[in-house]
Image (cartoon, rainbow, N blue to C red):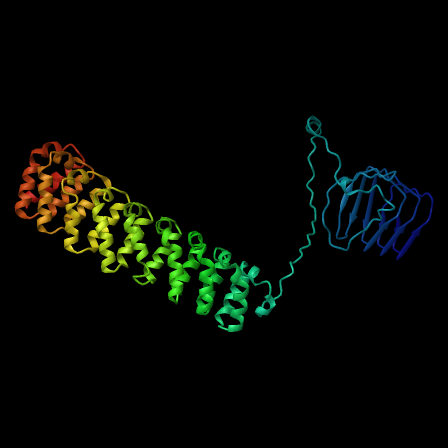
Length: 478
């Protein structure tokens, strides 16, 4: 047994052999400069408690059956069964992190020591099954260095952005900063922002962040500056209105129009594109804002376009809603202009998935005389319309809003129809007939029941006819 407890141990022998020995090294620094070291024990245990180990052997050969190197440093603990010779090393075993400082090996002295040799070559395929080889579990310590991105300088004053305000508008945080500065209502700041933004106003109005600055700028700028904005955007106002971001900026512009020249520029830009904008997902909101904010004379161009393309607008999913808003915001003359067109095309509109809502809206919002005029457009077509999905809803509403005389001739048309039996069994018309039974006056109710009775036996076997039969039975028992 050789125990070395010195602080510094230098071995300069050319050749040393140790048979069946245990070597314990507890020194702070161990430098071995042997030219050749051969160790041939059956069991070799080397416990290294050093803070720093430097191995400078030219040739290292370990021919033991079992070799255990326990490294109590922060790097590795490697049980190994190896021959290390001729600057070539094979190290097998489990690696695990430990608790002390790191051990270093000079690559110039032990050039064969390679991290790729940490794991031994393992058998594959049939050889692996024959040997029962299992891959050792390894734990690798990975040190990742995170580098924090340098934060941009904090914005305090707009002067920091001189020459870069346009680019800043397209940034979420920069745009918010500029909006807050505009809210301070400092004329110098507003002028600085306006001068850099104005040449790019159309582009910024359609930008996901820039459009918010444009809205704020339109809100706080002077009438003269606002006029410049309107003139700059006028040529491209239709395309901006169709943009999902631009539509908000144009609506804000319409809210803050402040002179007749500004109104004229906007009206002239939109005048020939009303129907196109109405049918657009974003553009229709611009037209609705014009209806809300513009004076009757300034928005007349909308009513002229809608009246001239009544069917095209009313039968569109967005157009039917805009047309209803046109009725809401119209003057008496403008309302009359629209309703005349709707009544003229009522027979076609009532059968459309969207147009029928426009007809129902007119029935709800118009005077009794107007409603009666509209209902008369359906004379001679009531049974046919009652058996259609969309128009059946309108016919029901006609029965509810019509005056007594109009309602009377409508029910008479149902009773005199050759299709009465079909109506009673129809999935849509049966609801119309139920409504007719509910609202008809006593004498007409009796006549209507008498007209239905011949068909009652046939109604018992139909799902929709049973409703009519049940309603008549209840009324009879009363």
